[in-house]
Amino acid sequence: MKIPFVDLQRQYQQHKTEIDQAIHEVLDQSNYIGGEKIKSFEEQFAKQCGTKHCIGVANGTDAIYITLKMLGIGEGDEVITSACSWIATSETISQTGAKPVFVDIGQDYLIDVEQIEYKINSNTKAIVPVHLYGQMADMVAIKTIADKHDLIVVEDSAQAHLADRGGWSVGASSHAATFSFYPGKNLGAYGDAGGIVTNDDQLAEKCRQFANHGQLVKHQHKIEGINSRLDTIQAAVLSVKLNNLSEWTSQRRKIAKQYNEALKGVSALRLPLVNTNSNPVYHLYVVSAENREELQEYLKNHNISTAIHYPTPLPFLECYQFMNHTKEDFPIAHAESGKILSLPIFPEMTTEEVSYVCNHIKGFYSGLL
Image 1 (cartoon, helix red, strand yellow):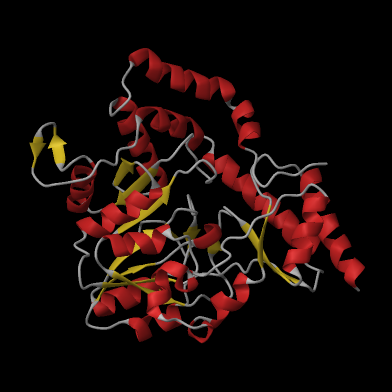
Image 2 (cartoon, rainbow, N blue to C red):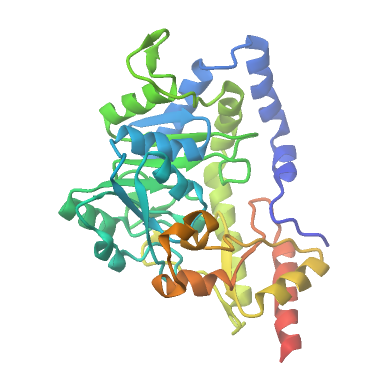
């Protein structure tokens, strides 16, 4: 048996007729930028998120940059974020002219809210929590801190489509939330795509304007902007997929449950920690594994694909060496970077495939005893 890390072809084949029809409608209309399909997807996705607005943009990285920029983040400001994420989270902070300030993670791999206030000073303007691997950060606690210090909150929700925690859905308790629709995401396009959701009418208009060369009406450029538009073919594909997202999310949760039950007796693994009242969407199923490299090689030799998200915590990347961080500054992020391993998970994965992965993991560790 061969187990891919994710199987986009399998998903396409299951929904080929609908997806092909949606793409051909765009081709027949020859309306590749803007139009009703963009508007329709934005309205549908905003509704799914429980927010008033969705602004489709070119990718998830632009989504963060545009949102921060339109909230006034810039030169001399500091923005607090997690030490564990993809670089898009921090590089977009730097692109505004602000400085990313990193906070260590907890055992759930999310930003440690108890450490946030230690990083706040007179230059701090915003917090960007990351809903990593599909589980929401503690937005109640983060919002309390933000309100106390009059800070902006922008949620990096690239991996958390439809996640919720404590009755809050993504984007409902902050100034805005940003999404990636990269192909491998829970809701993935067939190329780069992203989105911003918010309940703030003024912010929504600013983001839409800035992302479209500073215009809301063609040739009426009220500000200088950038070119970051969701194209119509991607919106058409996303609309079809959005109709299946709830079902796919349920399937991801079932797969995670099967992993949990099958692997709970393996003492060399720490399974994902799910917080109280949290409903993760399991973009990734990440374990903390002893002898990770040997396990990964063993699984590879048995045709099981795995990945590491992410091998180097943000503060230790070469581009941030000038900050002179040490492993003592972020002990959990540093320690876990040598243990985390992402196991295969995608909605079309069968119970037999999950069992195959689990049996080989248990076989590997039993062989070490």
